[in-house]
Length: 238
Image (cartoon, rainbow, N blue to C red; front, side, top):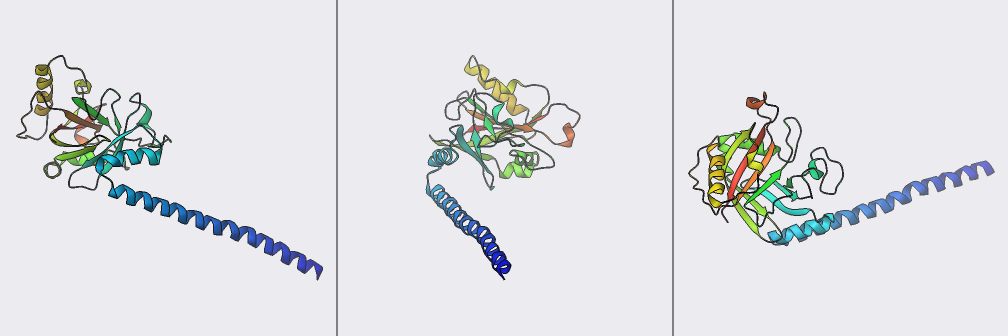
């Protein structure tokens, strides 16, 4: 009889040890969900430029410099910037290892002030990657329906109109950020336009500020090339 009471007591203790953590875990999970809902509600009610500051605070990461979205689509991503162009190749927004990395701004450029801003991101034919969406621009209908890109920084919202789409296989001059004169600059951006697989009626000027999105091309037409980068090039229009 004493043995039965002993086993009963032990059973009750074990049961309590199992139930109590679950009870508190549920409460903790509920609090976490409430916190996420609160953040989302706050985020949705903010001005676009204020969202960048909120993202910095939520992720505790001052490397966040803006957000990028494509018109007429649900696509949106955070843009980060490090002190070099290697750090975010395989890191997520929180600095943890991530195969797809995080779209990042060239360390030499500034989203608000640079004549040319370059943003890099990974792509893959088989799995989801941050810039896989850019492959859609190899389809002309998609290009025509998604000609505009929005960049938000903590300073301002900017609109860009895409004027060139092409795959580069051997000339990396587009990555240069220094131009000695306005005429050299105009020649450069017109050359980028002339390489486009689509014809546009965009007229470029010396005052234009441009945005280049770069990702690896997975298009079969370029499979023979060791390096092939899909470039989506746009000019600031607002």
